[in-house]
Image (cartoon, rainbow, N blue to C red; front, side, top):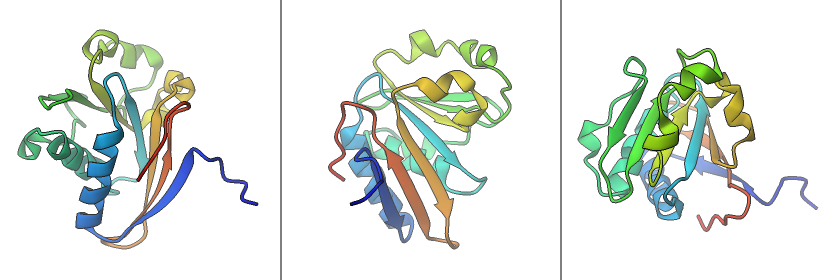
Length: 152
């Protein structure tokens, strides 16, 4: 009997195409007001995943860039998407100042480096840890929010 929670799914991503396919499946599962918390070392593919999510949601993936310096980028899609980088934030207050309580209503909010914001640890959110295995390969650990089902 497995000790892994039923809302946790481990996935192997062989290459960029597999990451795009995963993002398409994830985009189909996302709903308005969902949060996706992304962890992974620099270069793991967090922004690449967001680019693929935007494309899968009908937005222009060419507009997607890392929000490292801007802190937050918004994208017009069938389901609006806010992409936040919390790397340079040091408190819940820094995060609150972005105004996502209002901006995020009816949208998907994707946060890179959520562990830097303590308040996010209790959020019922999609959580994705990306581990680099090789230049192209990734191991994903997807935690599905309580009350939701992953059909990926």
